[in-house]
Amino acid sequence: MPEQRVLVLGANGQLGKALRAEFPQAVIYSREDCDLVNIDQVDQLPIDQFDVLINAAAYTAVDLAETTEGAALAEAVNASAVQALSHAATEHGILLVHVSTDYVFDGTKNTPYLETDQFNPLGVYAKTKAQGDLSVMLVPQHYILRTSWVIGDGNNFVRTMASLAERGIKPSVVNDQIGRLTFTKDLAAAIRHLINSQSPFGTYNLSNEGPASSWADIASRVYELTGHNPADVTGVTTEEYFAEKEGIAPRPLWSMLDLSKIEATGFIPASWEARLQEYLA
Image 1 (tube, rainbow, N blue to C red):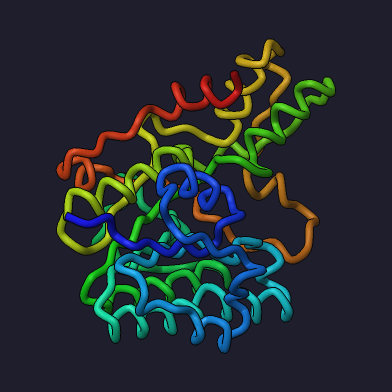
Image 2 (image 1 turned 135 degrees about the horizontal axis):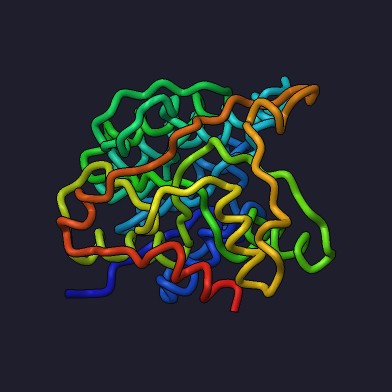
């Protein structure tokens, strides 16, 4: 079977960098090659020359998306561009792989979210991501990877906490948002697995395995693993953390994703605790 021709969008993001390693033969487009804000550039993508299109690009500034300018950017990248990519993938009969988010849910559940659970996005970013998902679901050949709390090569929560620890800062960190980290290494590997195994098309949840944890729990673990005192991290509620701050997007308090569907295809992600140790080493 000949090597599939793969096009990756969003090459410079945390996931994009992991996809470069996972798909070394792929054609990689960064924002400089195709700015998803510009629908003309999206329409000019040579999609008919590929078998698989992986969209790892997104507007993810959740608080800025609450501003007029940010809302327009989120709508352009997360909804309008994805609709255009979906139409092109359908027209040319190619596989579209798209990355979604736990933010499409409102976080009021107390058991892990299933792929079939109903959307109830809370903020502008969340609503635009939900719109994008709905477009991709209409593509005959598609995989949606719904993920949460992504950590990879770039600016992220773990790196911020490690930096604070090194500087002797004792942070207040949210302790009522519950979920699991997703390392881009595993997310990229899961995408390759679904494609190579020809798993049934549809939506698959993907985070790392491991216990449900708060951001404060993870911060404490980062302090511990970097040789600092985990007690330096103080847990606070989301309401306390954002008190008197303006323009803050609502966050889902529960981001646990049920992994049984993707695990049934034979892909078992590593635990977030093991990946965190590796990452900080």
